[in-house]
Length: 459
Ligand code: F0G
Image (tube, rainbow, N blue to C red; front, side, top):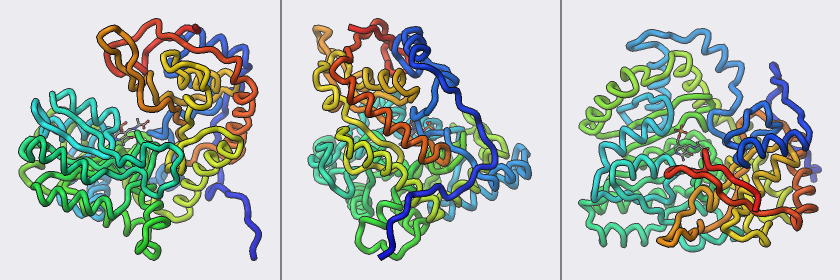
């Protein structure tokens, strides 16, 4: 039998960007200065930036070359026609609109579908999705299967929608009041976990039964296709691109932040089947984003996206992508760090509530871990717990989130295995010092999306 070889990056490096190496004292000082909120740090203060996988990836030489050849015409640019063709082929949908990023597509579509009294049902709404829905006065509910709430249970498709709960919600509310069913693939707010084709087909059947619109938020559709090929019977011999096409053809509309699997730094897409809905979306697009053949992007952005949407399905790239995320997660697990299992596509989620079990929920163990990773290692990541999702009751007492997690999101094609090994090493220091670390209290918070700008102080 062949011996197992180390995982290698399927690219070599042609241009480098120096990283700043700072001291622990410097980082402790910077953290105090920014009120213990790493969103407020300058990127130059950060060594390994795992805040997000969105728009932070490296483009290929082909994408950069494409940008030089792009067409910057206002209307009917060659670069747009090329992108439109790629997206039509991928989605099978006749109407394709460009937007400057994912949430612009969300604002347009959910702005039209939403409104007071309307209900949206999803496996899990991402926070910008929920915000755009709630902004219209509509309601958004997340319906994960019960077993998916068990953070450590090893299941192949923990991102699925609970179809029977969805049916109950539709019947209870009345189908006429349901604006859409949204499938987020992979399920970002639930551990980056994949969704199976079987589940998507069941969601399709449910939407057909009640005549509802099925929207696929597919910003990580290539990563989801990887999991389907390797975990769902019947897909072993299909290519990743074939699986993605089959996936997206189940939807009535498609929303994509191309900053993820589009392999670009900016860009988004909105696609749909219905002519009338397209006419309405087109009007809103022109008012707010730009003409239908650029949607707030330059020709070079469109060109880079058209190339990225092909490159992302390269089997060597996708293998490296999923396996390198899993590499970080399984090395942390082997050290005894509690991680959400199995590891998702774009990020590793650590259970800070469990790791820092001595810190009470109202002293934000996730935020403490985020701060410790920065102080000890210069690593930046984000809390996904009671800072992000907590609320208050009538007595100003915290209603905590379901879990106190942090997310280590991996930018695409940016860090090498030695960077990731370094991150794993920093967790040794976290384990060594976990009994000494102290909780945080909030000293300032805004009314919405507080995690971006909240300020903290040590308890
Ligand atoms: N949908 C999903 C599933 C997302 O993960 C995101 C962004 C969006 C929509 C919005 O797209 O940022 O281009 O406007 N997620 C980023 C993240 C911000 O860090 O997970 P956008």
